[in-house]
Amino acid sequence: MSQSRIGKRPINVPGGVKVDIQEGRGFGQTVSVTGPKGTLSRTLRPEVVVSLENGVILVQPQGDSKLARSLHGLSRTLVSNMVEGVTSGFKKVLEINGVGYRAAVAGSKLTLQMGYSHPVEIEAPQGVTFTVPPGPKPSVVVEGIDKQLVGDMAAKVRSVRPPEPYKGKGIKYDYEVIRRKAGKSGGKKK
Image (cartoon, rainbow, N blue to C red; front, side, top):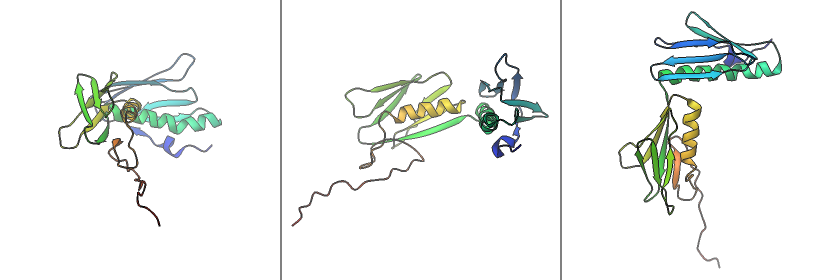
């Protein structure tokens, strides 16, 4: 039986983190992880088995079916992200490029002025916070303990005005590289 290289790796549980594994009725196990930043819970598929031994979480496939093997590495990564989220959290930084483009936060609502006739407002779901750090270049920081939720909200903010390739205006991730295009050359040919 070949196992996933990622799935075989054990997950170390840091101090101050409590892991609870419950057997599900009809479906797989429910793994709850509680740490200094909060609590996350996820029900995994019955094709994988999660066990906690001596402060180490192990994820094993149930049988040798193709589905069990394919869910092995995914399930291990999901549990690992839960442990990382409740200890240190996740963060995505988005840069805003363009004249007159601005962002502001009021409570849990992010307001973006992106050149449209109206401001665009995005409400943060529970577990996600928006911050706009002060500085010459406007940017938005999306933080939370659930990696999927943080990524979804960052993608939603970026989709308000994706970067365009000619002048680079729009909202982009801080690590994203925009491939620039030359544009039309307006000279006459003889």
